[in-house]
Amino acid sequence: MTLVEVCVVIALLALVAVVVWRPLTTPEHRAPRINCVNNIRQIELALKTWIGDCGDKYPMAVSVTNGGTMELVANGLAYVHFQVMSNELSAPKLVMCPADTARQSARSFQNGDFGNTNVSYFLGVDASDANPQMILLGDRNLALDGEPVKPGLVSFATNSPLSWTEEIHVGQGNIGLADGSVQQVSSARLRQAMQWNGTNRWVVP
Image 1 (tube, rainbow, N blue to C red):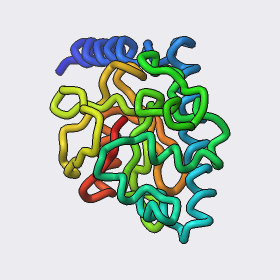
Image 2: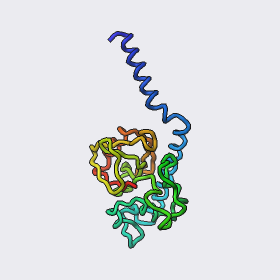
Image 3: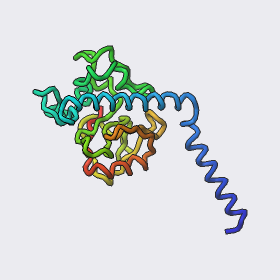
Image 4: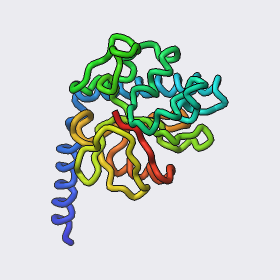
């Protein structure tokens, strides 16, 4: 390739990068995503507090008779796992992404007020504090083979063609890992993070 051709290719790549990333750098997209990251971080802190009293196990691994939600995993309802942590979560708005305009925050964690439509985040039901790189939770705007993932308990292999939809963060998303960190990731990075989990069983609201 000549120098001119190389310059043209570089210019085109730069233009594509600007077109793709510009929506995420505008204030109307950036602020909600930062708030979403803070929400996920607060949920992770609530989970860490919860497991401190429950033998280092998340609610999904603790029996209902002991205050957990293990037997409720199969029903595919995401909200019940957040509901049992109502003492650790300061308010229901923490489980709602500010960019998730299709849903509304609940008034309380009480039955009748709080349900799946008041939750923006999926939970990894097999996440373990012993495996810090496992995906613990993340934005619900998931797609498999380009089709939005339906609510419920879903299983993904490590090589599943999973991606983010445009619905919440313009084709991007946030995930929280069992180590307490929060990451803003592209679809490619999401698939990379899934490699640490083995089979990924997530309950999607």
